[in-house]
Length: 196
Image (cartoon, rainbow, N blue to C red; front, side, top):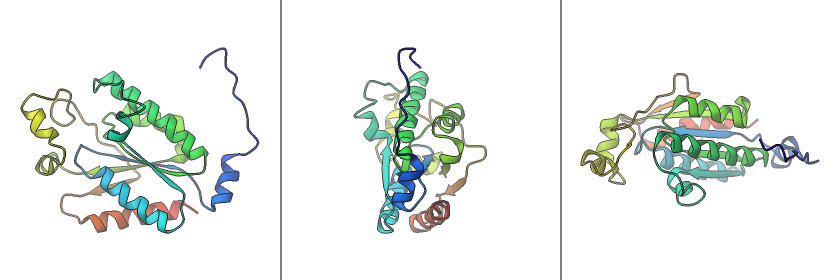
């Protein structure tokens, strides 16, 4: 923190915004390999929450890297900074009373622990989209695995860079043999009971 800044305290609080929205706000963090279904599930869950008049916003890895984080590479230190910035943005959205859905590979346990430190443990829900590497490669929605196997992409999580699976996620969704509809309903049920 800069020694030349002073935190300004505003009169309207997170609690005031939650009361206005008539629901709690928190961060729902979807983690898993590229192609696991994180963004697809977050998007579908957000649609269902919106139908229920829940104030939401989604953050997605590709979208963020095209804007605020376009200066970052996929080297380990830049991955850490990528997640730190997203956590700070998420914190602001949660303070604004918004249920924030974030879909990011976020391969390192230490980085996901840092998200909890930034947004607060009570405001953090970790959902592990557990899809096997084989299934992610079979889907290869963006063609990234093919490029990684050909040596065209360096630091590809699951291929040439590690993915550290959550040890104790709040919710684990194994998508290999489960329908999207079932996955969405499981996540939705979990989130709705936390909104009260």
